[in-house]
Amino acid sequence: MKIAILSRNPSLYSTRRLVEAAKEAGHEVRVIDILRCYMNINSDDPGIHYKGENLAGFDAVIPRIGASVTFYGTAVLRQFEMMGVYPLNESVAISRSRDKLRSMQLLSRKKVGMPITGFASKPTDIPDLLDMVGGAPVVLKLLEGTQGIGVVLAETRKAAESVLEAFMGLKANIMVQEFIKEADGADIRCLVIGDKVVAAMKRQGKEGEFRSNLHRGGTASLIRITPKERATAVLAARTMGLNVAGVDLLRSERGPLVMEVNSSPGLEGVEKATGKNVAGSIITFIEKNVNAKVNRARTRGKG
Ligand code: ADP
Ligand code: MG
Image 1: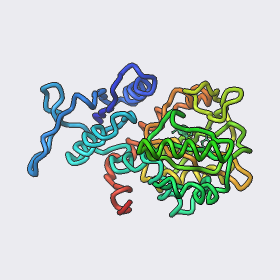
Image 2: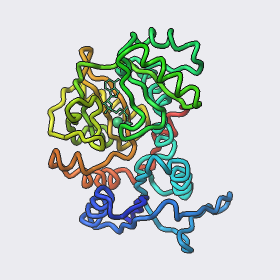
Image 3: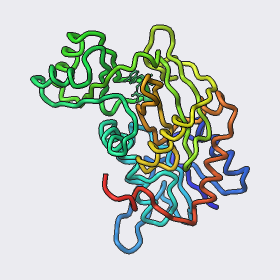
């Protein structure tokens, strides 16, 4: 197979591991900087040019699209899809997973467990919004934040009101979520490939921090997950239409709650914490599915 990895930086751990795994399996692989792709959009022969070269002949494409380049990155990926190249994750699934509110709505439709979440536009609706999610403490999240930035714990009602008012004043989209205290600053990252959780790790926030993000100083360790957690993670990925996803769960008194479904999960933390060859499993998944050209996200229709 000839595989393209869409990544801005070939030296990133995840990119390097995918290149390695593809080569080990005997494939030809090339790292392509998404921002250097430009597109010829026409109805006869849609194409992609890359630094002056006409890109052709790829069987599969692995998108590793950073949050800051979602718009351009998904456009380039769509162009690969139009050229008949098999995408590990589809552009439409990536776009929907990048919007936290849209993701929560899709998951709620499939009855996936999640923290109670509210969203409003006007400051006058804040009191009722806070009641709706069960009152303070609450977690406030900017819709397009990532790596823990833009996630705030408001311990009192007063704090929640003033933060919400401030963000609404700035026209930022912010959602309010029930705070799952019993998670105790930890969450579980499940690496889903197809219909399996191939690796899972527990991430624990540093002392005094409710956010477990590794970028915020959290630490990762191996964990055994329950069948219910496994099933929840797989259902969440499938609902988003993602073949490969990092599904983040909180352990709550009422069972696993999905917080987030990540379409370009980092491989470093999870491979190091679990000792699993996740990159290898991704390449194996592509080998099995490249010819199927089944398109889950698209066949499933709207959303
Ligand atoms: P980001 O996309 O920035 O990673 P998340 O929604 O994953 O945002 O939140 C960051 C971290 O904050 C989570 O990994 C988790 O540890 C903590 N967290 C988020 N939401 C809640 C919640 N409702 N209750 C308890 N902790 C939460
Ligand atoms: Mg997160």
